[in-house]
Structures are given as C-alpha cells and as structure tokens.
Length: 180
Image (cartoon, rainbow, N blue to C red; front, top):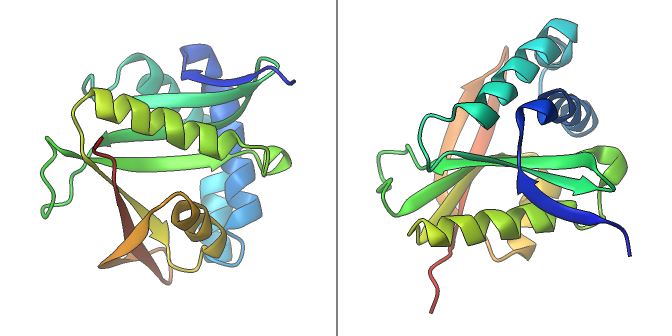
C-alpha cells in the first residue's frame, strides 16, 4: 500500500501547494474562467504570490480555527484544503465553517486524496464544535460539484456572481457534519 495521508501544512510545503493550485486551475478552469484571468492567476508572478500566501497560511493563520491541510503520498504534496469559520452573513461562524479551497494535483486525481482531505477537514471541524460546513463552487465545475454531492453535500440555493472579466456564477453547497 502506498504511503499516503493528510497532515497540517508546513512552511516548506508552500511552493508545492502553489504548484498544485496552479496545475489544478489550469486543468480544471479553462472552460470556466476567462482566458486572460486564468493566465493572470496562474502565471509566474501569481505562482510566487500564492507561495507567499500559503506560507503565511501555514505559519500565521488569522485564528486557530483557520487551517491548511495537505495530502501526501510518499512524502510528496498531492493536494491541499483550507478551511475557516464561515463569513457569509446568513451563517453563524461559531457553528458553520467554510471549505475555502480543496484541490488535488490533476496528475494525482482519482486516487482518494480529495476524499482524505475532506474527511480530515470534517474531523477537525467537529473537534472545533462546528456542525455545518459550506463551500462555494463554480456553477460550471461539474466535477467538483459531483465530488461534493457524492460526499453528501447539496446546493443550498445561494448564488453569487464573480466579475472575472466576465460574469462567473458560483453556487454554495452545504452539509451537516454534526455527530448523531
């Protein structure tokens, strides 16, 4: 069996996290985001900016309830997930958390890394007393929506439009993580 798992991110993971992010966006968002916007957020300058942001997220999160996790296989970062208390005004940040991002390197997809990241996220959030989990997904991202639906999530009816040089609709998904 392969040496796989999930652990808290460390500063030295930041470059790998940024690379996974850029690879995942290039592979998954070409049909969703305008070409110029995608090029801007995945180019060399953006890669360095993401590396710095992920290093800060790993070492100096805004609160103890903000976490960054990485999935690893044989010591290599294969994906990552970040979560925090929900900021949407219709949710209580004491009981509702948000998956801010969950990405797996496209070359490592369909190997359970995303499921392990999501399960570890839920475990941590339950320990922190959260009972509901939400995330925003591009409406056109059928693959990610399908992943969340297969894990028991559903759209909750909330939508927003991002202006990324063209309107890009997003839907909010949610799930109950309370232990019964």
